Length: 287
Image 1 (cartoon, rainbow, N blue to C red):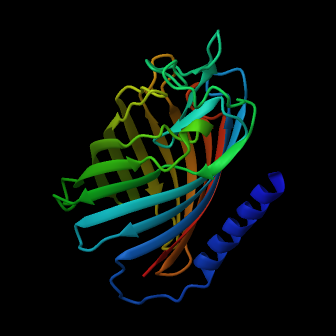
Image 2: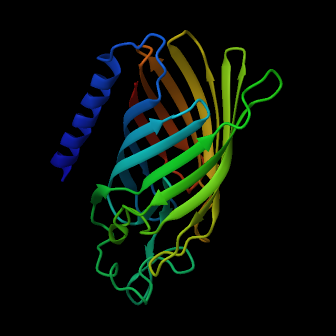
């Protein structure tokens, strides 16, 4: 498993470099499609007694058929060192064993309730890997950025249950959500805020609460090609006994050409609901 994971990670890194540096610049072209590939690592206990190491290789497809309308699709491959946590909407929440057998999550129904036996045989100490939940976000700019007003775009979100719920890679249900994104330039500073309300699906294994997510970020145009930045992301816990996630990141983006970009980040958790440490790199190519 470790050798296979290492090979997958190296392949992903190689594809990112190839996409970033061997792209032909598209002078003045309208780029409606962007393809991205990332490699992310996170480690933490997320309020449990065990540390979970996780890797994610997301394939990102961004399509903008008009100047205002956009669609962002993410298809992730996930590896986790154990099943003491479950992934929901890109965040992790604890799952623990209930006395008397079975796995009981921190929500109302939890993971592996008495009505379902499919998860009771899973060894929480085993590593798991596979396709994660695919997500799609649609956005539409209702107000262009002006001198006194930010760019405003409502958001619609759906999560498809493509991850294996028995292995704790997902909840096995559709999730829906809506929110708002705001963007504004202040000189060389680019700022962005996003808030979203998620209505997760419930099953016999998982019964999460509705929850909020948010993102606040700022980046500085150091040169035409280089932009360092910071961000703060978090939300409310989807399960009663879990902590609210809160995470800070230092980011760096580099435009190798008008068509290709590379970037990376270092992250630290500011609550028990977030990883202790995280890091990631990504590359995008526009067409």
